Amino acid sequence: MSYAGDLAPAQAWDKLGEGAVLVDVRTDGEWTHIGVPDVSSLGAEPVFIQWNLASGAPNPAFLSELQAAVPAETPLVILCRSGARSVAAAEAATAAGYTAFNVLEGFEGVPDSYGDRIVNGWKNRHLPWK
Image (tube, rainbow, N blue to C red):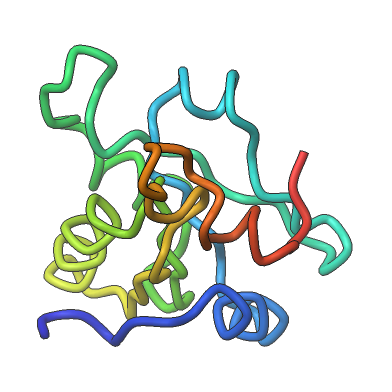
């Protein structure tokens, strides 16, 4: 593993309460149509930086956007839809000098046998979102 580790959604919430910053790496469309994590009760706001652009192409500005938004000494908790893109983003952030954690299950979690994302993830574990 070339990043700080994997966290279950509840562990990610605890890490955010300790001062880590939540970085949501989903697409603009996902933020708009599916929802976003709400960490305002922790006195924080998530940072939104797409790992992939809407076209599916990698975001070439990911690291520069991250560096502009979060100081390198601040731990990161990285979230995507299901916990896959966030691994790649955590690896890239770690290579750039951050301490980065991946959120297992992501925001929506894995699909059930019908393809619905109602099994696990940030939303389905009843963590705050809007």
